Image (cartoon, rainbow, N blue to C red; front, side, top):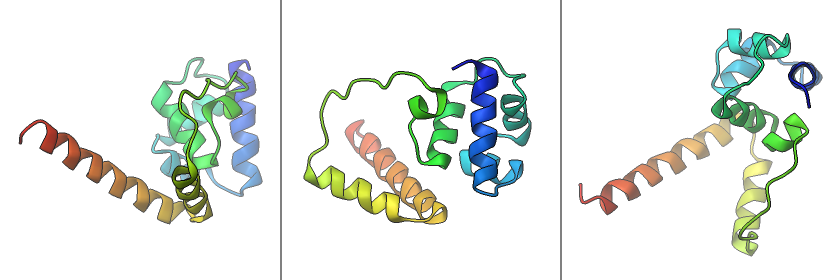
Length: 117
């Protein structure tokens, strides 16, 4: 997908949800200026974290958003992971953000304990 097409897709998805640029930017954890540049085709190569944030906000993959080929899954999800993902998808955006914060905190604690802090 060309970048202008990416911008059009982002705008289409945003408007179909009734979100303003500011609302989507907050959900995707990017600036409104960055989002505007993407929608208007000014930004030709959005950074991976920017694409990741947009995909998260739209509850899709980066590949679905950009029209790219999905990456092969190395380890398919087991029943527990599938149940966790289904539960996550049932949450609203605010609660999803809370879950992500908890996960990030747990991962940080795990890394700290593994490094001997």
